[in-house]
Length: 569
Image (cartoon, rainbow, N blue to C red; front, side):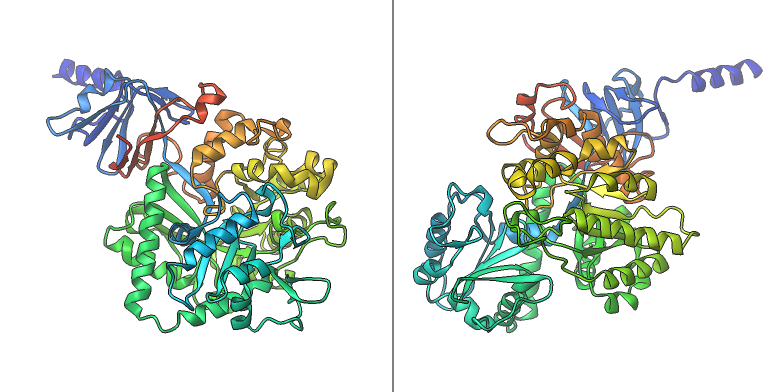
């Protein structure tokens, strides 16, 4: 009997399979792969076994044969790479879906092309109905509009081309809009309308609004649009919301996004997510930042806070705030004036006092504060507000508060991220998208020392996570990965390449480090026994292939919780 016990112990101790459990076979086994685990204890493997929604074994093809039963689905990877599911660190879930249903202006190469697109849409749109589009970016046009203010078009020709429809066209960044005369009339905007706090109405020399509105100045137009929709029935509203959700889910799955950090959703939006998750209709895992006002949040934070609810599909533990605008629209709040607009230092879109109150609410209710800050002044002010909050609450030691974007930093502020434990939630493809005009806005020195300063932040010890800010950019993580490791612009020029990430750092920023940023590192972000079976099969090994082959890499399979949710084949 003693010999039998010793033999059993020997077999158990010498098993080559991490996490082997012969009680029940795996539901899925992926084998013949290049498994990039990002787990220090077992960095590479060729096979992964999944049972239910968890990873139960990681190892060699041979060692995992014991997990294969008569009903196990075997996925032959044939040398393809398997990586942890991508975690989108900052994007807008409902807006992503909505953008898919609106007039897409992202590929327009000129203002004239946009006018033609809107005029074509007007021919199939009932008279008086709003035409809404998104994605234009004056920095990407072949030439400036013939009539413009600060490079932004006078929309008089749009008003002539489309006189019978109100038109509202949102900038690719989401921080500016263009409107025709019909829309401005409905919004009550005239030559006498003043620019509001945190916004600007661009006007011609004679004082006439040209139809371009920065930041908060667009609010009357959005209110007029909302007024036109007020008679929709609840069923019509719900049908539109569900269509947006479906489109967003479809985008996530085809790009291998298994967890999505939703950068700003209302309490009512969370209620919709809860309903869908409870019915099993939310395959993508959502990590949500609330964006309601301080007054609304004060009485709702405890009630709506949830962590890994609905089988780890819904977490609500962040609060989103915006302190400035975007660089592309001259809205980023800077310490010194813009090089190409010397009269402006950008816009502070919400008060620091309001942000301090939000910080106190986040502390009191155990939420992460996530603040949009793009300009160097905005980042400095946010870091200071966070530092003051941390000093006032020394009992809170693991906060993981975040600055969303952290795009343009004064070198003196870079070490503060590590010192304060503030996470830099950045977007790789913003650098290559904005690159053609950044030096024009900021000048050589500011760009070189603090623009999209991934290398400087990482070398200082800060945590940097990645994303796309979709629908501002495409949701494709491989696009941001490519931008992060090459800093190559569309014309082939490298945009300050000394700030590049290594390939391993870039992959971690989309997986392991992004999981940490959401307090979810025990659940996801690496391929290890006990973690959620969120996996992506790629056509190429993105750690080894040439830069040119990165652009050809595609997501072949997206697996969430052990379910194959997308297959390119």
